[in-house]
Image (cartoon, rainbow, N blue to C red; front, side, top):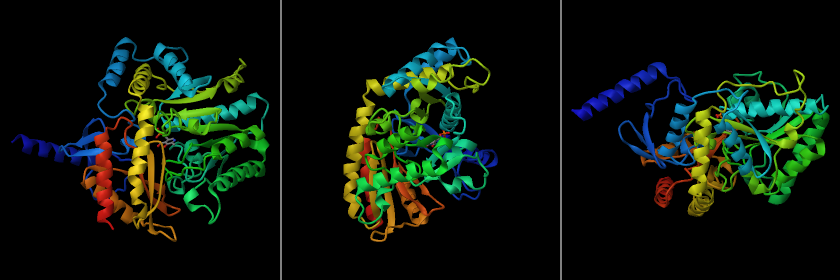
Length: 454
Ligand code: PLP
């Protein structure tokens, strides 16, 4: 009888879902019923019916420490009891301590502005970059250079910086002043070109774009250390450093979007640390709280912050949001950082990433596998219909593989660029706290699905 009641409840909930809840990125006529997720523990989630899935996407690339961490819930609860809210025109200890800790994680002197989402962190970065240029007398600088295939968020500015047409064109015109360049995609580089030379060429193209636009009109460049949502495009090792140098030559600020790559995901604390560059601005969200509460941050190098010293109305940052840096979210983020350190999850991410990559390598010979690329505990497998021609596998086939994984209890992602026809990259970003058994399950399940498709 209990079971029957539970099934009736589940049906009622599904009906209410269809009647009232507008889902992200989901077509109206989606045939499958929604997966109503009821709980999570470690790397695993369970739906209402008790079906369990290994979540190899960490939700939306964010649950770095895994699900069910009571100490994070407790940190937020205790803070809410003491001080639930106060805006950051004033101050409170959780925000102060978190800003200080983030500066330590960034291994340099940064000053931090808090918001609620990755999109907002990027919007804040654009406003800071534009105003910074004004403050130092560079009045004509307002453009932001970003890359095709990049995703930087859903708001008008962050979406303007995004380089994926399918997310944009029903909402245009977006914010003006955003210019796009080609990202490095080593798998599809010109035939015969050495990878390092290709990286130099891409960085040269970016610099030439700055020149063609008129360097005196460009305020900033924004990029992720590797393009994640656009299909796991890992640049040649020198690329980010060359971009940094180009920015320096032209007085352009470098904003690095660490929304996905931050907080250990890359095998270092932040993705850019793998490339030995110092960004002027670093934006972060997702893994900052491991997704437990909304919080994002825009960290600005002290030297940039120092330009905001005037006291006139327009000389300081005219920017505020109600919820950013809420005491509970900051307290939770602090507990999250502590946990990442105590359990050495950054190192764990590097190790798991290497093992995931090694485990997947045997699929290189598979007829549908064009490329396998990784960055820390982020992995992408580019699927092709024809290995020689590198023709992207049609999305229906990609979707079928993902469904087959889900039927066997494994959730993986699909990324790329729909309009350009590259909607063919399977993505893996399991929690950094995944166990050895979780990784073994992930590899065995995925390989069995791939072998069944041969
Ligand atoms: N930047 C990157 C690289 C992202 O992947 C995302 C979200 O997926 C964002 C920014 C936007 O973050 P949010 O969805 O929290 O606004």
